Amino acid sequence: MTAPHSIVTYNLAGRVALIPGGLGGLGSAVSQAFVEAGATVITAGASESPAELDALQTALGVDGERLSYQRADAGQEADVEALVWSVVEQHHRLDILVNLIGGWSAGQPVTALELSTWQKMFDLNLRTAFLLAKHAAHPMTQQNWGRILHVSSRTARSGRRNAAAYAISKNAVINLAEIQAEELREARITVNAILPSIIDTPANRASMPNVDFSRWPKAEEVARVLLFLASDDAKLISGAAIPVYGLA
Image (cartoon, rainbow, N blue to C red; front, side, top):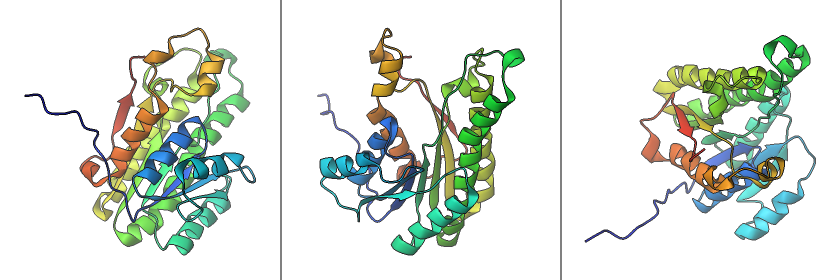
């Protein structure tokens, strides 16, 4: 007899998760998944007061104790340090960092690539990852447990033409995760990166209306991969770059 299909659930009750970028197309799905798993979630971004927070709190039936927002520019070290210690001061711990900050810019070969575009991609994709991972690791080391998760990209490993600044900055995020995984292993902190292809979000559909969306990984599916990596079930996985391609 075939066993009935079931969905694996993860219990993050008592865990505190910081999710910068946690209100975007992928971010809302990730924040929802972590709240539903029992975690207290703090999202963060550079804008003042996102209306998306109210909508997500209402949809999940939670208040600011379970899902909140703090303004912080992830590219500024003072902001990131203050953000991390604000979370610790309010919640007495920080267990999980899910770094969703990043951006895309491509279309030029290396010979025509502007230095400003190169710098923008490294600031947006790598500088933010470095600062968030650097400062989140301090309270995690003190409590001898933690999860640091980054979103890199399939393009980081594909050698795609006309995407050098984006691809190389995202590949450097993988290197960052690999190195920090070794540095934090004895503190029982795992550090991993996922490599999604194009994610099925409203923004991506709007920008590419003539492609087959069904082949893209759904935001909710990508969120469940991150949820697994944040769980105790993934305690043996660290320093990994995990493909999340769907059928794309």
